[in-house]
Image 1 (spheres, rainbow, N blue to C red):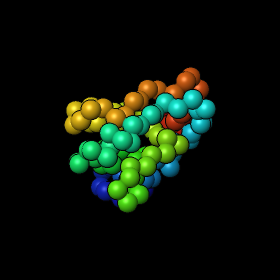
Image 2 (spheres, one colour; image 1 turned 45 degrees about the horizontal axis):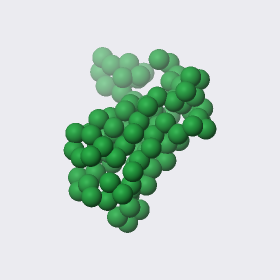
Image 3 (spheres, rainbow, N blue to C red; image 1 turned 135 degrees about the vertical axis):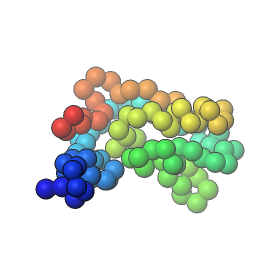
Image 4 (cartoon, rainbow, N blue to C red; image 1 turned 120 degrees about the vertical axis):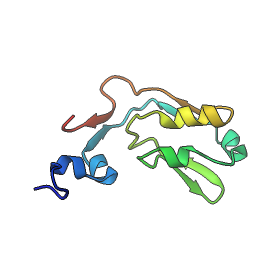
Length: 104
């Protein structure tokens, strides 16, 4: 049953609901590395806003990141390099590791 007329249920899921459909196989090798010293000089901190998985958070004034749960969008690296010195170094996890999406 649809919550909006004419749209199937799949199209009305929130981002949080959709993230619940993702499973993760952790990679021992880090595929995201962040130079938090550079982050301290970044005022806008765009990575906090573009990551739908909330990989990046603030603890007081310190940027904290946890790569578990990353859905491999890569937007954090793009906005970081556009804004500043490129504190985020991002690449895809090794084969078979990282996010696996259910239902496409």
